[in-house]
Length: 177
Image (cartoon, rainbow, N blue to C red; front, side, top):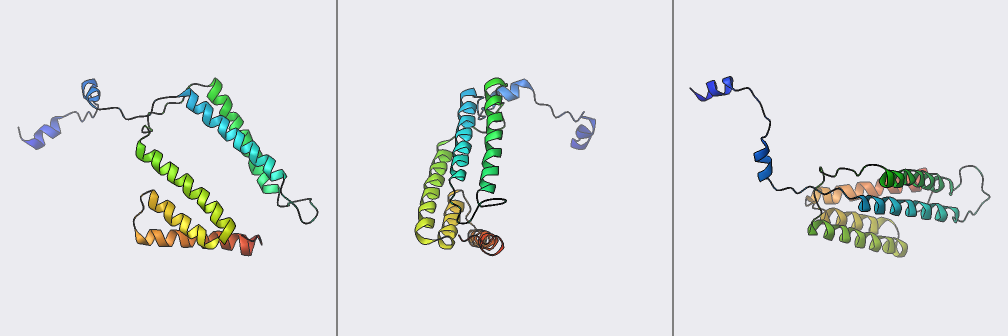
């Protein structure tokens, strides 16, 4: 029987036998209720903090209508509501299956810490220098740390993103950055 005849005679079944799956290592993340609770409570705490901070925004002119407090307040209330739902689901719902996620590795933790450090430096540099230069440098460093090595991507994306955000806030919304 030739190879073509064997293929034509087969049923086309692509199921994997249990023996084959036992031989493969399992790299998937394990379900974790404490992790879900910690993340949900942290999200709720941060959104409540954002709500408190949005109420402390100083208004130079009289309030009313859509003032500078409005969007931060609406977004933080929405985030708090969604976080409260997440807390309820993590406390009373079934533990989420994380089989489609790969377990954490040292490389991922290092990248996360680098991203946090870059973000802190970016906030400080924006406060000291202004918006334009620190934003471009921050985006280049962040893209590099997450694996982008194309010079076109490292130049085009930060410059275009910074220009669009600057144009939106400076020219359309009249909010100086």
